[in-house]
Image 1: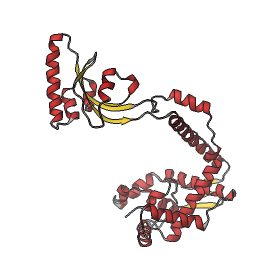
Image 2 (image 1 turned 90 degrees about the vertical axis):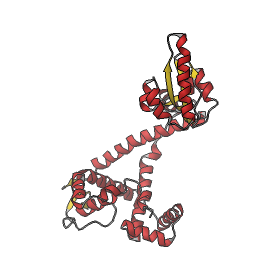
Image 3 (image 1 turned 180 degrees about the vertical axis):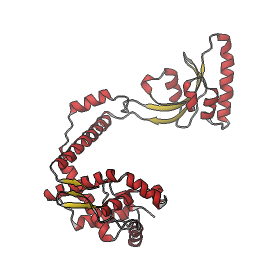
Image 4 (image 1 turned 45 degrees about the vertical axis):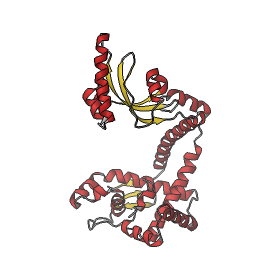
Length: 318
């Protein structure tokens, strides 16, 4: 059954899902946020909602122990949620019934669910339809207030993008890059030993062609430190490769293995695992801009939450 939690952002934790008999304690107020309260019930429902399937599968005693250890962390999340919803209300931000209905229809289409399947999924997750609508409304409201107060205020200049691109060339795809494995034999000091090395490499090459695992053979025979990792060299940009490598790779597609070839360093057999095409200048610029936006958003979102806390009345009774 499709889990509907997947469509709700991680910070939407005020779930109204059912919880076990534990708690008889759950109507105690554990925090006051301006004029609103958070109870044990709110906290434990949130933790039940966010719990992974693995955690839910634990024995009740073990699960409650883990919940107890994380109460303070989850309470902080709930306080931030309260503050953001309150900020949205102050700014007149809301979600209409039409928007909520449209969101539900989008979910049904995305997961190919009819009304019966959708209702069954809600029931399995512990939601009534009204409770789920409330969650979607909160989602819409939170997204809007965060966009209005944080994301929409972020401006990235061309100068910043250029500086970021120059500083992070290795992380951006500014050249074709190849993820390769190799089996390597050090160049013999005596030219008379060259034929012995070639024969050894050819024997291994034939084993690979016969279906033996490249990584295992690299671990066994390669004379390069990468042999311990199955010959994996990671992604290497085309511009820094020896010509012999680029010549071999130009004839290969993902999964292909080269015939043994010499460089000044020694004899190589390489396997092409994956190729990443060079991005266009516009794509590199857009990628850099997106990374800068996310960095700036993370900083400003945290700052905004601190401001909300500093101007709020918060009393914790945990």
